[in-house]
Length: 81
Image (tube, rainbow, N blue to C red; front, side):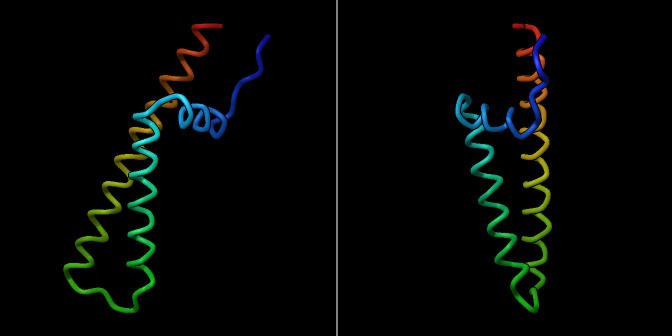
């Protein structure tokens, strides 16, 4: 009987094995860093607020895509056992 693999471990496996997942994770990290820079500012211009909202939406979209890939990988692993 196999032990269920956790979400973090599946993500690590995908980072090593799947170039698309690796690309999405890198893009997600890039957006996260850009948001971090914006949050350090005391005052945001209107343009920066729009940029912040856009980055948050893009980041969430990538997170959803990566979650879907993890779920698909999990199903493939169960089917292969």
